[in-house]
Image: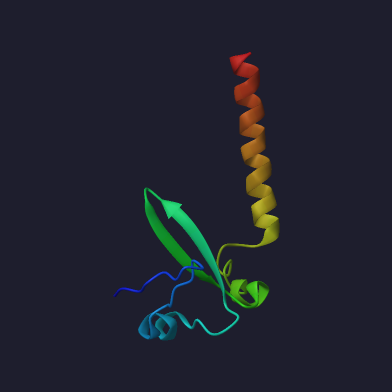
Length: 83
């Protein structure tokens, strides 16, 4: 697929790309340069709603805190042994 860039720096996103990614008028796009290549990501209209369930199955917040406290204790022990 190809598209031209206008004198204003604008281009058209091909229809099949818009449909596949759900890009509609007013959609926000995130642009990145990666090793000389442009990568474009559509951003969700509602980032909170889009992230719901992302951590499902990852354990509870209590478990996270317990794991983090254990990791911090290991870090402190390593710091004391290294000092």
